[in-house]
Amino acid sequence: MRFMILVKATAETEAGVLPSHELLEAMGKFNDEMIKAGVMLAGDGLHPSSRGARVRFNGSRRQVIDGPFAETKELLAGFWLIQARSLDEAIEWVKRAPMDGGTELEIRQIFEMEDFAEVLTDDLRNQEERQRAELTSRH
Image (cartoon, rainbow, N blue to C red; front, side, top):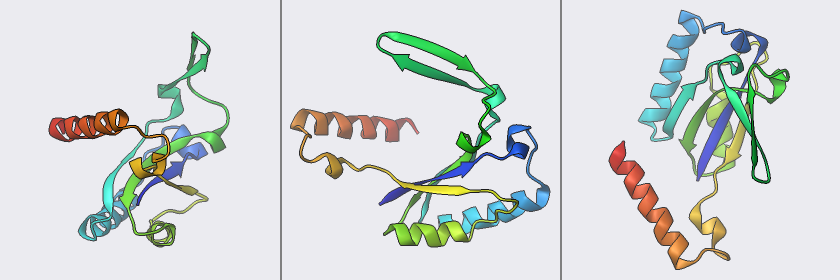
């Protein structure tokens, strides 16, 4: 199972405060542990919302909303994409993350193609397989 670990933003991350050297070292060690265990698939930090935008969809209308965004509790500061056998295993990895200061991490399982079995046609399955192969070859 794949899981997305969402790092919630804080007042500091939204202010553009970069992590300390010590935190970067600890994060590097944590990432190394996950990579060596075959768990980590990807992970990165995000710039503050002041450097981003949102696009709101309403019928055919598209509204672009420039950051910053007011509700810090709804914002993300980074992510990990991991492979784990269960939600419990994902939780155990996340509990080891070198976080502090009220940082909150959210764990969400990613849908797999078999989750859509009742509505998945052969054409849609072939399209998904082709897209994944193309993405893999490009990276």
